[in-house]
Length: 281
Image 1 (tube, rainbow, N blue to C red):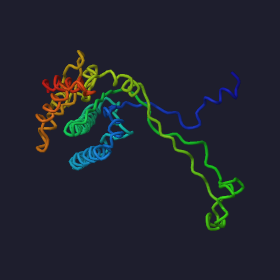
Image 2: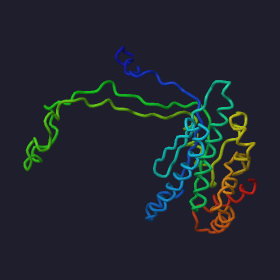
Image 3: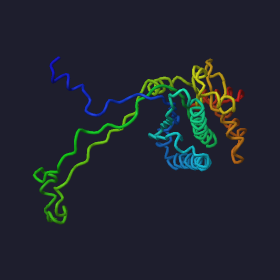
């Protein structure tokens, strides 16, 4: 390989570094069909309710000074990603427990809000090293007035001064800021999520070895259950529901029973699994 070829693979920005992170990958089942059927307002209400519940949780957390470790919420069409940075220092294990507790609370907000609106969602939680941050293009560039910026026939009804103010060609184009977010834990979430034939948000049992999850297990926010014949820790949406008087777990189970018995329902099996594992919550 020539020296010039080697330079192609040398970063211009500072080398990116990994850090520990907990992340969840959440998918709204049948999202495309909802859009095609004109249920856009239902999607909007769903997102509005999530936003309001996050606001209520944030208001509570502010009094404890927890805003800095609140999960980051990203939404891409019918897919949502929650991420929280964990701290690798051994003496911060207690802080990581608080981070994870807030993280599970946000996942329960999304899951419970969806179930209350009879929207089936599934998700998976993973802990592991990830890479996240931003890289920039090498340098900004001067805007040159010599470059053709617009077709000449578009200028026939306007003068140059009307379209472009004086000095329009003098200035810098800012560097491109390119965010990145990747890692094995996120990749595994993307590949494993479609294999879960159930409604809910799940965490692989190997995370039990990580003391980060202990406080949520002890507080019953996260409980062990069995889905598709495999053991998982699952978000305890019934506990969240019991703390919100306007929600009813019984109504959700009743709806799930109807859907599970509906052969024409595309998510009948997933609703049945919701019934099965909710018995352990």
